[in-house]
Amino acid sequence: MNLHSFLLKSRQDILDAAVESVQRARLEHYEKAGSDQIHQRLDNLYSLTLNALAERNLAPMVAHANAVAQERFEGGFDLAEVQTAFNVLEEVIWLRILKYLPSTEHAEALGLVGTILGAGKDALARKYVSLATQTHAPSLNLRALFSGTEG
Image 1 (cartoon, rainbow, N blue to C red):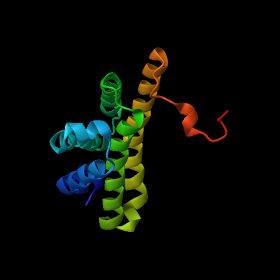
Image 2 (spheres, helix red, strand yellow):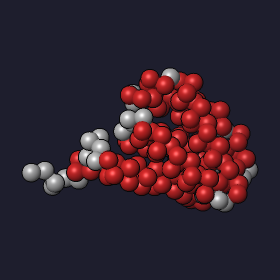
Image 3 (spheres, helix red, strand yellow):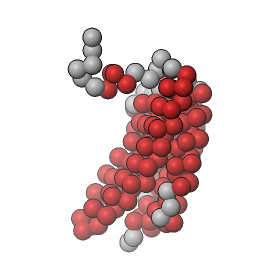
Image 4 (cartoon, rainbow, N blue to C red):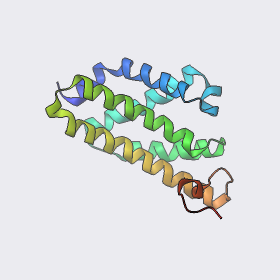
């Protein structure tokens, strides 16, 4: 079975697990949104992942990530909240790949999924940081990401 078929077949299980993981992360804005909204957002991201895999085209994922960054920034979301949603979906997909696909397919499958979602995360972060630096947002503390920057 190819990766695209596997991911289509596993869609509901992956989304259910990803929604549970986002809920366990206790992300402020996602908790307020509720499980239906979380499911819809992850389902959209999953569809973009499937399409990028089928078409070998990252442009729709990057465009989506830019739009999400703009929307979430304006909504007062912390970048970490939004990145967590991407990370959770990627982790759940990776775990399914490792569990159900033959080991000979792991490297390519993980590489493809990582490339697709990584492009989304990269675009999201670049757009969010760009918006934050234009407005000097207090929620973006890059110093907290590096040790040795205190004082």
